[in-house]
Length: 221
Image 1 (cartoon, rainbow, N blue to C red):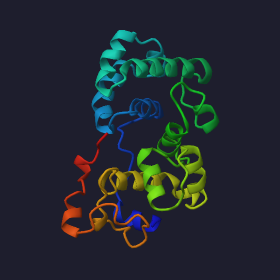
Image 2: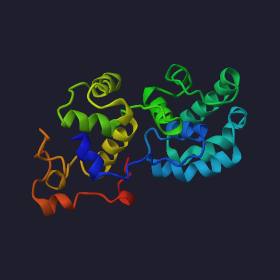
Image 3: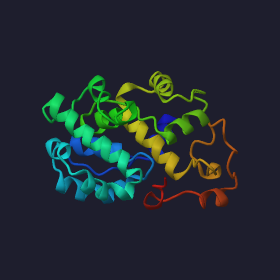
Image 4: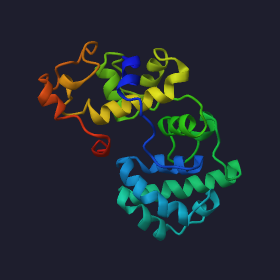
C-alpha cells in the first residue's frame, strides 16, 4: 500500500508555503483548525511585517490578531506566535532548533508540528499524524490506536525511516483527495485491492470518480 501511494501521489509535498524553518514552524502552528490554503494567504503579510523571531516576540498583539484573523481562533494563535517568538529568542538565540526534544518545548508545538518542521525544513525523517493520517491508517487496518503518538509509533515500525516524511505527505494527499472522512471514493481508489475498509464509500467507478478532488479543490478543513 505504501508503494502504491508513491505511484498515486508522486507530487505529494508540504502544502504550506515557506522559505525558512521559522516560517514553516509558524505556518504549521497557524494551520490548526483551518486549511493550508488559508494560512498561505496570511503568511506573506505576516512574515513581511515580522521577518524573524525577535520581530514576532515584539509584535503588537492587536496588529498581529488582525493579520491572523482569517485563520480562526486568532487570539489563541496570536498568543502562541508571541510565545513562540519569545521562546526562540530567549532559549535558542532566535533560531528554530532541529531536535524533537527542543521543538516540543515551544508554545503551540506538539509532535505533529515538530515532525512537519523536522521533515520539511531540516530533512530529518518524521511522521506527521494529522487527522487525515490517523483516519487513513486506521482504515487501512494498520492500527486501531486513536492517540496520535501511539499511531506514530505503530506506523514507524511498518514504514522505513527514510520514507517517513514523504509517506506522510502521500497519506495526507490521499486523505484530502480520495479517502474523505464522510464519503470515501472507494471505486476510484488505487488501494482498493488491499484495503479492508473498501466499500465504506461508493464502489461504482463513475460515482466514486466524481468524489475525487483535484489538487486545487482538495484543501478542505
